[in-house]
Image 1 (cartoon, rainbow, N blue to C red):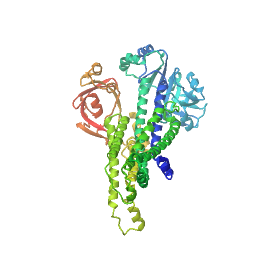
Image 2 (tube, helix red, strand yellow):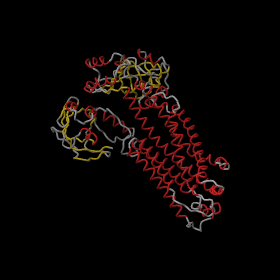
Image 3 (cartoon, rainbow, N blue to C red):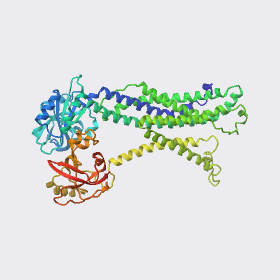
Length: 636
């Protein structure tokens, strides 16, 4: 009966079933791609790091440190990386790059991709360098051309395409040039004060317990101020980033499904209105109210199922394309695979939501009496139906449950659900208000077309509320995403405010300042601020040495706050992104003053557990300097 009854409206119903297609397609593609990424990270975990363990230092290793590094494992590779300008003699082009001098067989896992492939091994022997592919294109270089790094000129053996654990996007931030470690001293670029990173890569036998090894070396590594990273750490960091993106996009997809549900409800609302006379006649012929309802529930379910199947198919298509589109942004190879759990989950969420929205306009069919066949043209009686409210309750509970599952904190989940419900309620009240305002109040002075158009908004069988909900929520969703993007971009990229800098020059020596300022003035570039930078380390906090604090099991100061290098500055005034929250700002210090008043950023002060009047002792290039916290400030 459901099939026969839909004969004249199948095309229209099928069209409206597409309203849930995009939402289900989004859930399918996002869910499946999330599982793809999860599996890729798990399967290719070692290639994300290229080694089992990486140790990084800011200073060259001395003899005792080298012996300790050898005791960890003999199968190792070493790398020295730093930033430097390079020159391409072919066209006199210059570029700031990241130079990486390599010794050993790194990467131990994954492939060092170059063109030609032989360049990946040839450069290690001292025959030349491998240059980032983007640099080769930018400066129109080819294998055989030369590059000057410091005082050393070497031939280019090929272009670098990919390094394990690094995506192509990395090259846009810091184009890389790989050279052999044996030629590094000839560049004469490394000296006292150079900003250099020294890395040691390890490969261990499969039976080696890496976690236990890290526990054993942690104390010594921390004492040397080394950083270390394992495959599990890299996997966790990458997985956390991917997981956050996955859950955020899932919320967007779910709101799209809700929008689709409104579209389906709108279509069935119109369809059922046209069928009320048919339902009344069926009741006269002996059809029960449950049977009458079942006919249209079957139609609604078929409508939702067809939309869900189309959405899942489209989602799988998008999922197949995503690895290709995002290949340059991902540090691993992602292979297409169908994950049935993610597919069925998207189908269940989409179909369940569609079915609930379908029931809302269909439940009144239960209350159609046989007498309505005679009075259908004027009967508008409406009765409260507890099943309708039950459907609303299930929708709200489902929205809250899904939101919490994606945000993983009930406060955020409930907040997201509440915001969505408030948007629904606001738009519904707005629509009701528009209908009420226009009922009987359309000015007769308006042209005929305007009077009829506005009157249709409040006439029986109109769908003003559903249409405004659809358009309003669609705009709400798109605008929210757009404003979120603009907010993030606005925070990261300075506006056109001329008092804010958009370029920074580092490491300007005292004897270079005046010449540099004259050069900038010749170019018409104003110098907005000059700020000295002093690198220093903490030696004591509130009279307690750092080593003593570390050994205290009750201390709550984060390790990074005790071990980090503080890049500090001195000036006589605050800038517009700073605000004093406690204490007083001291623009000057008298000569010979023992305890220098300093201003700490509130976050650092909280991490160190210090406040106004507490004392800090810093090691400034071997000189111990005592300082007293005179003010705290917030920094944007």
